[in-house]
Length: 446
Image (cartoon, rainbow, N blue to C red; front, side, top):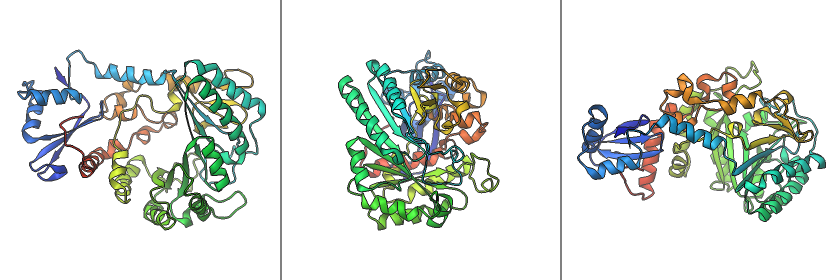
C-alpha cells in the first residue's frame, strides 16, 4: 500500500469547518475527494506517508482508500491519468457541435478575436444538409448530442437555428439519442417570441456577457452602428424572465472593472433577475495584441485571486462555492476531443471556437469533404501533459490536464494554468463550510 501523489493538506484550528478540535482538511486532486481529519487521524495518515507505519484504525484506512488517499502498490496514478485523458479524448458515444449559423454580429466589441472576420454571411441550405449529414453518419453509435449555437451573433440567423434544431430533434428521437442545446448570445435580440421559440427547440442554456460597469460595457461592447447595449441586454432579460431557462451572465473584467460585480448583482436584483440569471467572472484577454489593452488585462494569477471575493459576494455564496468545487478533468475541452467540432456558416470545420473564421486553421470542409489544415488538431489530440515537465510534476494536473489548448499553442505558459493552482485552499475551505451549512454530514473521505 502507498499514498497518493496528489494530496493537499490544509491545517484547521479548533472550531473551523465544524470541528471542535484542531485537524486537517485533506484533498485528493486525482479523485476530487475531500476528507476532514482530526489531529490523531491525520498523524496516523502522515506517519504512514512518511515512514510507512501501519494505520491501526481499520475504519480510517478504509475511508482513506475510498477517497484514493491510499492506493495499492501496483496502481500507477500517472498512467491512470493518461488512460482517463485518452478515454475522454477519443470516446465516440457523444458528439459535440458548436455551430455558427452566421458570421455577422450586431455588436462591435473592441477586444473581440473575431472582429476582423465578421461578415454578413448565413449558412446555406446546402451547408445545413451537410451538417445534418454529419450527425446521421455518426448517429448509430451515439448516446448524446450536445449543440451550442455560436457566432457572430447566432440570433441574427434564428431561422437557421430553427431548421437545424428541428432536424436534430427528429433524428435524436428516432435514434434514441439524448439531446441538449445552449446558445452563446449577446442578449440584445432576446424578445419573448424568440425565447418561446428557443424553448420549443430545447435550447436549455444561455450564456450572455457584460463588461463590468454600464459605462465600461457601453464603451467596449457597442452596437455595430454605435450606441450602448448594457440597458438593452438587461431589459431584454427582465422582459423574458418568466420564460428563461438557465442563464449564465459572464462578467468580463480587467484591472479597471474588477470591482463592478457588486453593481451588476444590484442591477440584476433591481430587475428581479437574481436567482434566474447566474453571474460569473470572465477574464478579458488581449487576443488581438491591442497595445491599449496590455496594461489592463489581468494575469491568470491576479484573476484567480479575484474569484473568492466574487463568490462570497452573492446571496447564494454557499451554492456558488459548491458549484466551484475543484473536479477532475478527462480532456480539457472540445478542442482536444475527437468527436467535437466547430462549424462556421460556410461549412468549414474547426476544433476551437477561437479559430473560427481563420481559414488556415480549418481542419476540414463539409462541402468538399476535404481535410484541410490538420496540424493544430494533430498537436492538440496528441498532446500529453503527463510528459510535459512543468505539468507532469504539478499536483493540480488532474484538475486542468494541461490547460487551454489555444493558450498553450500561443505560448501561454502559466496563463493556461487553472485558478485552483493559486487559490485551491480557499476554494476547499469554503466548499467544506458550504456542505456543513447546507446540513451535509461530515465524512472522513469522499
